[in-house]
Image (tube, rainbow, N blue to C red; front, side):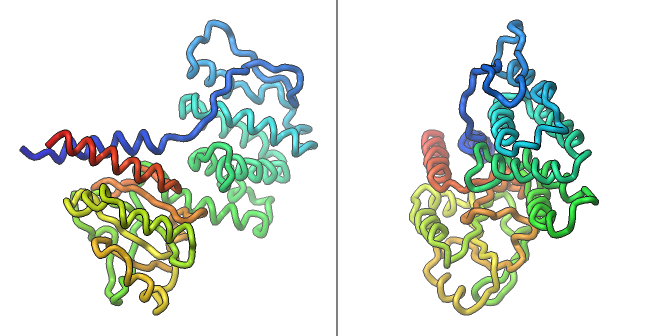
Length: 311
């Protein structure tokens, strides 16, 4: 019997679980008098964590005087961090509506909007983000890009971020990649074997973390089993010129992998903290993005274990 459908379902569920947004539980729903402004008091009749988080997110900024709030960057940053802390527990539509309403209100003052985007960048997008959430951060970056009163110089990095994030969100078709192999031939993401999932591994051989990740992935027996059985294709991409130095270094790469170079890859894939790995389904839709090799290797172990039990 063909077990491929069950394998695909297993892959989907395991990766969805492994790459869930990290979060920290917070149960202090009422102000203690030490906050910048009065936080919403959640009605007692809302009992579930989702219901209470939805209310908190929806009404967080109700008692904030937006016009004067940005007079203290430290305090508004602290408040924004509290606001973001509840996002993992709220419904996605509630979060996005709240973010859009906040941006609409703050946009009346371009200077404050720029400050808000910088705060959001540190809280939701940067390497040290409290809660990494690209889809939550994108509206802030895009709002800066769309604001005509913010200078080109001030919006430059936000434009770069917005372009990359907008093209490579989870649930979207992966942007096409036309790459140059070490032997000089050309390859395309869209030409990879149909029916196989794709592990799109962006890495730079001059990056120590990238090299460590490559060695670990290359040696992982569970990933090798999945590659050998045709369930997964590993596409290793160097976001730079296919020069001789790069070609020499690829000589030790896993021979089962597809390897290529794409100089402008960072224009349509977000890779702010390499190595970056996108996981695509057999139709090349982005299922997940991760910077964490440990989680990835654990996912392969779980998938292989489930597959073995099914034999």
